[in-house]
Image (cartoon, rainbow over all chains, first blue to last red; front, side):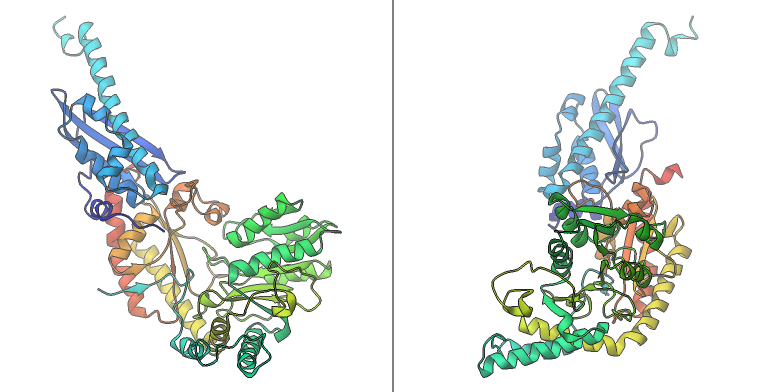
Amino acid sequence: MQPYSDRVMDHFRNPRNVGEIENPSGTGRAGNPVCGDIMELYVKVEDGIITDAKFKTFGCGAAIATSSMVTEMVKGKTIDEALKISNRAVAEALDGLPPIKMHCSVLAEEALKSAVEDYLGKSEGNRALKKRGGVNGDKEN
Amino acid sequence: MRRVYLDHAATTPADIKVVEAMLPYFTDHFGNPMSIHSFGQEGKAAIEEARKKAAGLIGAEPEEIIFTSGGTESDNLALKGVSFAGKDTKNHIITSVIEHHAVLEPCRYLERHGFQVSYLRVDGDGLVDPDDVTKAITDKTALISIMHANNEIGTIEPIAGIGKIARERGIYFHTDAVQTAGHLPIDVNKLNVDLLSASAHKLYGPKGVGILYVRKGTRILPLMHGGDQERGRRASTHNVPGIVGLGKAADLASEKMGEEMEKLTSLRDKLIEGILDRIGHSRLNGHPTERLPNNVNISIEYIEGESMVLNLDMEGIACSTGSACTSSNLQPSHVLAATGLSPETAHSSLRFTLGRDTKEEDIEYVLEVLPRVVKNLRMMSPLYKEV
């Protein structure tokens, strides 16, 4: 089969940002057991900037490398910038993927989007609660 | 770094004696066996000698051997050649869901050309039930094709019993013996087979050459037209060096088989026990005893096969996986799925296939490296924490 690029192998051998974030601002998940790849991605957001990202992945070499790369790419980005990271950008940053492995970059994009959306959902929920006097307002009432 | 090759089911290195036997047939004895002159006759003598050796390996007569380009061609020739030859009266084929794609794809091709195919299921160990064969037979059944041993999980099928059923009903019986020829004793008469496929490069011979055994009297049409080679059953100039190599490999295999089976079985069991002992949440795939002497197929839960293969490769160990994240549909191995494994467990499979040069130290090296690789990958796995 077509071999992986040196950069893919580098991220596979030494994956960056493996693990979980305690109390993450957002958590995302993509993939399913049938296709053999499951990614979990955690982000920490401070003042609208993604300050940290970590992942856990069950999957092939490409799945691990794309997870590692997408967590590197997203750090320091705003929410809007993060949502614009495409699977192609992830694949390109890895000097390309074998055609049959492009779906791994799609999973990386999906996992990131799902983490960011989870964060957005939570923060909207928090704002709504605050408006109604919920969250920190309870004791004062 | 230590290099340990444990992927002999994919291919084996050619024995140096095989290569030495082949070399003169590239240069000194380059003649075309179909030529009447002395150059041609040297080639002719060489392939006939190889034919005897190949026949000897499986208890056949030399004239029952057709040289082909390998296992895939032999399977295609058996399936299509027999089906098309009998198509005026019969149009039904019986096979199993765990066959190699070189059998399954010709079956699907034949389905598109008016044939009907019954695909038999297997049990959790990968065994075909001969009773299922009996039940699937109709008065239109022309051919039964069940592999001798499975290339992924190593399960050895009850071929003699299935052959008996076929024989009693006058149905042709083909077996894909690519994983067993030269590795297990084979006698086509005791196994009751009419057609048998084998490949040289799986038994320390060269790539690009194989045989199809066709019992005398079997009706079969050729796939290749354009010459009288192989009694008109396979046109194409003979691959003389390859055929000579196959003959030599067959000879060496007969010589070494008994000793090799014993040695490999013991190393195989050491590797299986070692892995199951050292790695939690691991399981053996395939039959525990009705199993190729060189096959170890295990699933290591919560981590994916290709990531293990790549990590082991970085440590010098070559093996393979049934996690076909490489196939276009991303489905894991059809064989593992057929034995009832969940997709996750099938994606977590590793296959080690031992060979003639495998040493005890190689097994110990795997048992030292693998637990470390598993630990690292499990730390990375989102499934493992859910245990």
